[in-house]
Image (tube, rainbow over all chains, first blue to last red; front, top):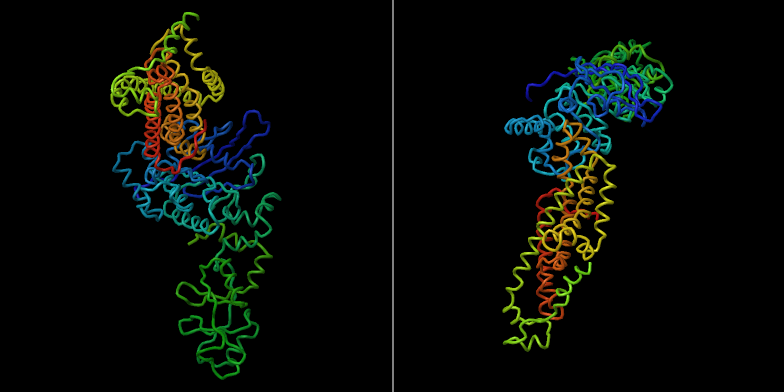
Length: 389
Length: 246
């Protein structure tokens, strides 16, 4: 990568958009701050003004009242074409130029900026690397690429001049679900490296929760209903509209934001190979987990002791029940639940990075978490969002 | 007006058939479909009319394109002008060509100026509408992307809109050129010696009709093929091409 521009903060200050001939404003006194390097998702039902809000940042829609600051410089003081060349722009139908080759498409902004040919060519080659596509595609026309490839090229084109801010208007909206998920993950991985400030428009709350460091929920008439991190949004919806929009399954969605280590795990009585079963039986009295977990000398889980195992004198090397599924403390909670349900077990040992037992997760812990709230999540998920891998 | 008709009558009435004697006379006398011998002996009499017609078509299509292109660019971002220009060029397009010659007679008289004026005016409607149709068919998301990445209006026009409109523009040129080739034969009545000259002078002599008419058709087909080739060459991203709107 070229020496990158620093990401810039974006700040909406009491922004209003009124279209002539309409009594109601399309955007109504919108104020929000996006710290440099974060993804801010603008989400809401159709007609809520989310795209209008995004477009005012590069002045493809003019601001009626208020101001938008990019790193403390008002966009109103900037020449619109210069301003736009400093912002990546990705749209749903890709907007790739059908008459230009892929390489020429990617080189659009460098060409507008008057880069010399070598620098442009070098940058284009770099970008193929960044988005993980074969540079040989550069000679093709957009219509010869798949939808997913086209959208990747759209992102590469937006990144060409290494802009500090990216505007993305439903960039993955027209892609089938499987490829969409792949593109989302790729973009999150990319973003972890390049750390642009991103304004991301979508109508899909799940996408918003997945992609956003912060989410701005807009409602009809361009009112900001809530601006919060995904976890805050799921835990404490500001009003009925947000609660409705986030969906009845918001508790489940929270699981997607947590890792196993974010929750209070239970402790299982541990049994070591060759240990007397009498000792183990004693530990089982009043334990949180009513089964004993056999571990090796490094405290790595080997299996669960069954009743017949316990009737023996010592803990056997091979207990009747295997330890599966073994969860990692870094696993995403939703996936952990899926593992539990799939193997039809109540309990699963959770291990740390070295494979040593760190606790036990049970379906009961998760269901308790789902019905009861908050405290635990607030500490963790609010500051730390799982990066999809 | 009477004067004008008097001027035209000798042309229209000239139906004498030349060269009724000589080795090819029997073929001519029987007025067979095609007398090869006569054609070989007399081919040079078509050279000047052919070149005249070629020049006339090239001039008028080029001129018409320049004007229509200008009108299209002016009205492209001022949509209210579109109906004005469409109406005006449309009215001009409906004037019958012979009537057009009479209308211009008191102003420009007979000759190249009149012929160029008429043929140019006839191309406007087709070219104007096709250029606009081409610009109108540019995908909105391409324009949005161009503008959003910081193209000025001019850059958007030359780098995105016009290249994407090119297939329709060339389609318009094809139609305009072919129809101009056809109408240009009539310009013999404006006293320009196009292939219409030999055609109308010996209207009953079949060999003549075949040669004069055939050359005119050949010219039209050649132009069409050339422009089609240009279209393929200049729009490699789009195959097969969409139909033009006329």
